[in-house]
Image: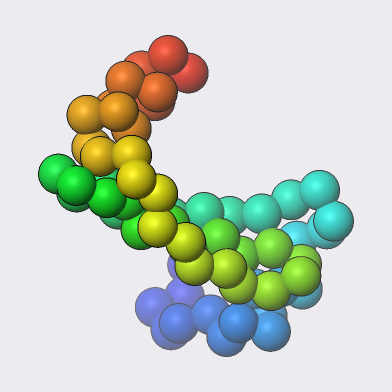
Amino acid sequence: MSPEALALIAAQEVFTSDEAASIAVPTLSVTPIILVSDEGPRWVHSDWASDKIDAAVKRLL
């Protein structure tokens, strides 16, 4: 692993059209989500709070 940040262009080149990476940071009221795909970055806010995110993740496990 490299300790340096990955440039956005380099990150986009890693993904094909059916791949992406996402980071969700649940809070008590909203969940900011960052998505990076071959088309670029996208930042959204979900109205799902941490309890709803936790329940959804538990169903996947």
